[in-house]
Image (cartoon, rainbow, N blue to C red; front, side, top):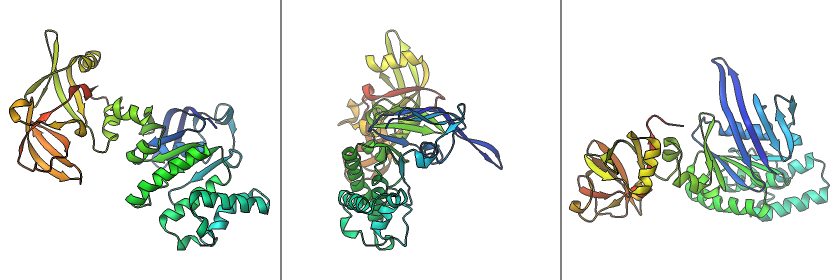
Length: 367
């Protein structure tokens, strides 16, 4: 089922006065799409999820499920959660401790008045699909975190919802289990073909799970696109720094125009811009700009005399296969990812910075 948010806002009343949690959100989630809401804590992503579920009413704007308007302040219409055919999985899993796994999964079907035989068949099928068929007689207290998470998902999908809503369901799992469960969840969604809205603050989850991602900040959608769009073509400094295993380097640099050439000055080094980056800079206007380059794109050059940018390593953090270096270049510090384990603090290094992979932003633009 398709989900559409049209200029949706939500304001809460508090002792401090009105708090606007969501500002003019426009989203269109396609049928069968795995769509991720990504952003830091307090950015409004869970509020958007609750609006989709019908747990909250929008202050303004419209929400559509399929062709049906399920919430509109102007039309004075609101469809309650029980009539939306949506299923939600919370961070806490919210299992009934006194019920067995079987009864937890069966609970929404029994409430809906399904026949006993149909309930049993649906639960067994969901248990087999989630790999929990052997623990259906256990109770939640006997289960691991990963098993509880699977039970919560089984309870949600057993209803065959038109819309699947997940609010940080993997955040209580350890790192190894979280990684393996991501793949299982993605495959499950593909097999079921259910339109899915998934909330997370973890950009790795967003990049690996999402067909598309909406990045939120302060209740607003900063950028929407595929994982590749957000990584390769960030539209704002915030998007550039939030997406990526290690934050993008963002430094303020002067841009000089000398004849037909444009160049930037980084740590006293003048770097002439190739045609592609030069066109980006021309569109932004000359002057002082924010220059962005990802740590994984910078390479350690073989000889200091051959490289246009030189610096000194201030810190080296061992990440296993790679080392994260903090390199002082003039009055700036750049993060560099390298597989060279021989480089340590105090070493002089030469940096090869591929300007065709650089990003440029106007100063002060943070949305």
